[in-house]
Image (spheres, helix red, strand yellow):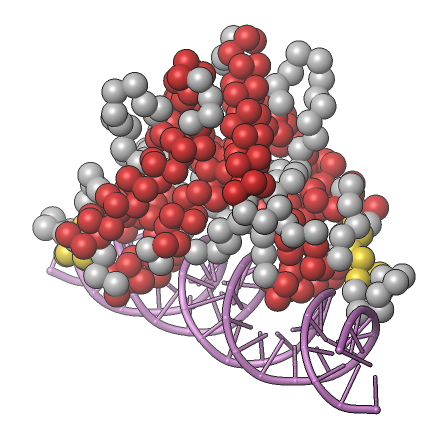
Length: 167
Length: 167
DNA sequence: TACTTTAGTTCGTGCCACGTACCAACCTTG
DNA sequence: CAAGGTTGGTACGTGGCACGAACTAAAGTA
């Protein structure tokens, strides 16, 4: 992991006093850093980087090829090689030659990997819920609902804006 | 920058269906990645990494020493050296020997650096507002308000939990 | 069969983090 | 004031993570 630091004063480069009726962009940025830091810290406790955690997270219900992994994680294939290498070296994932294409591998999570990511996910949820606990029940719900909406509409927007991951 | 990718399917290692009345932690994680990616992308357009952007952001209204910078950014002092080195090499910040302590430097942002970070902040705000635009006005406001509350209470919690950055 | 595309790896580069080791300038305290 | 410890920063080595370019092998296609 990198830095289990607390949320720094002005984590993001945005200024808080935007236009009149507009959103407090800075708050969103800071929240983003908060969540990111929690994840980083939790992952770090298992000696995982965020990207490794994401890798395992993605592999929980998928067995993609290296190429597909690259698309899923938004990384170049050359980056995927090393990423999977390191995870494999730690016994967290496996490469299996694809049945129909002898060039391709299917990357799968191992039992050890699954156990690790599951534990990590639990701790992460626990921590986030702790951070959010001070809010009244209704507000916590609302927050995550709104977050989900933004994420969904953003995905939609990107999915339409360009190629929907051709194929 | 690293990867101007869109928000991947299951960015975070959390599972969506938590306990009954509990928060959708996954949505918060995904929102965090969304914001993070936007920042990364925007910064990347100016050939800045997120951490470099944060550095400049912090320096907009401060002239800390290397040591204080380390605390602000949650990094080791040895990390700060290189960070400031690279920024200085690009003419974005300056080191000036401290008045009262000849060992220490004061790190300040240059005009070029300020201009860069200001532009970046504007673009960032623009993008985030775009992502949030599909929500009705009231919801956008509510989202950032709730975010601000979480961030504030978290800061408070951490500030009390341990040393308030002793001096 | 030859030509092109696709899947992955390898290599070189650069940033970012860390820990260790190391000065130089404080600050004690005797 | 001099010895001993503390503090501010740098230098160096290591490792993860990202990229692009060059390359091999297997597929697909003409």
